[in-house]
Length: 345
Image 1 (cartoon, rainbow, N blue to C red):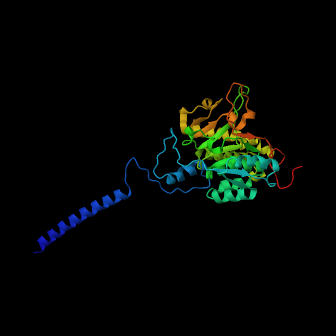
Image 2 (image 1 turned 90 degrees about the horizontal axis):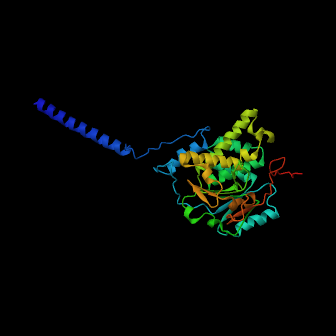
Image 3 (image 1 turned 60 degrees about the horizontal axis):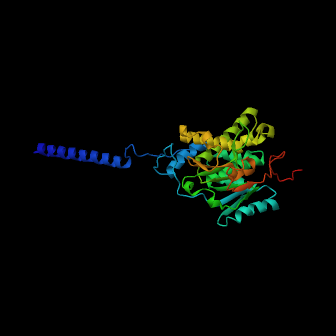
């Protein structure tokens, strides 16, 4: 009498085991679908040595969900360039002349908000918004000269929030800012820059983009490349002279234009475009421009847009529309490399 019951029990156990295995397989397949079309993103710890480029790559994947990025193409953003203008003030505030230049931009663009960063608010902003990058915060706070912080700050502001960064000595022409980017480029242009030196110079001169006016949507990897390269350069200077970054002298710093300024931004953006577009990008194709040119997601404006006086056009060549004028006030060109709390003699 016991044998049939034992056989029945074994059959029931076998069926139950099969069902359990099947359910376990289906349950696991539901949680971890294994297809070559999906990307599983795991949390990434960002160490102090992680570059900003690595940081945005890993964490922007979470924000972008499962979007895939083709390095040969750009991903248009649905968000327009924010209607916000950034300015960085020195300890002495805004001069009457600078106020006129600023008002020329604000009065012609009433829908744009404006934010003035001071030395104190800039330090606080970087600490608050880049606290997960302690080495970046440490470098920024340690920078010994105002112009170095002003240069780095503009890239950080535009990376974090986007908008338009203007130096205090920039005035706006009649074209509204929202019309600076031609209609056909507005969906794709994530960074907008203009040549400072491009046309009418001697053979072999070094071209550079203007940094007194930059436009961007937030989160541009090209701006991150600029920041990463600046951080690397400061660490290299510190190691070369065996001093802390705070103890760098102006002779150790060298040419600001190369370290944090226009040539730094130009070289880093070109490097970033090359990394993104590969052989499809040729720097020669974006020089001697007579009209705006979109390269990947970077819109490069001709020299007359931001820097008419720095280029030498023939009379018959296009020279409009002029969008801004840079007045070369040059408040950073002194022994302190910028405006300090104490009056500079």
